[in-house]
Amino acid sequence: MSCKRCEADPRPAHFGSNRGCAFKHDGSFTPKNWNCATINALLEYQQGDEHYGQDEHLEVVSVLTHSGSESNGWIVTTRYKHRGQTASAVHVTQDGYFPVTLQLIEEVLQAYAEARAFDAVARVAATGHKPSTRDPASSSLNLSGQEPERHE
Ligand SMILES: [Zn+2]
Image (cartoon, rainbow, N blue to C red; front, side, top):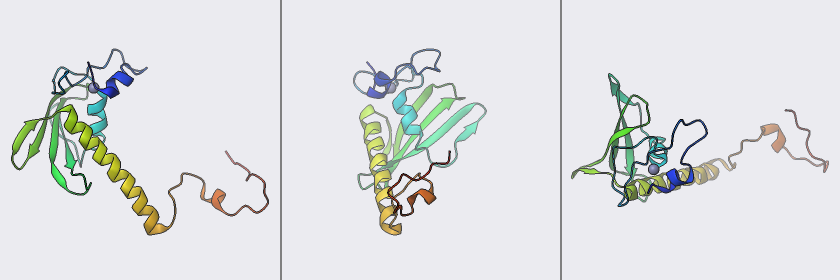
């Protein structure tokens, strides 16, 4: 068994072999993994610099509460070089440290997704503009009834 992200994309085209999911049947972490898609999704939220010594890298991701604003500890991961294996992943809190579970990481990813959506809404409220990737010139009023010319 693997997490839903590894199941959905077990072997991206540029990969030389299948992913090895970092989670067992019961959702517990296993260090026998390679490029687990859920771990990779988590590490996109890594805070600040990556810390490393020799070839060992350490990443820290804050655990958001449901309000999306406060930290409820950190997830600390270690990886050897960038070869795709996450050797350890622990949840560090004021009460101690605990092995991560798939459930915890799903909650963290959900909280980040909600915080991101909240940020986007707050930005619209603050500026009155919806975020747009369009060319600013194309957003001017078009009274001719014709499609604006595209310059690509
Ligand atoms: Zn996985």
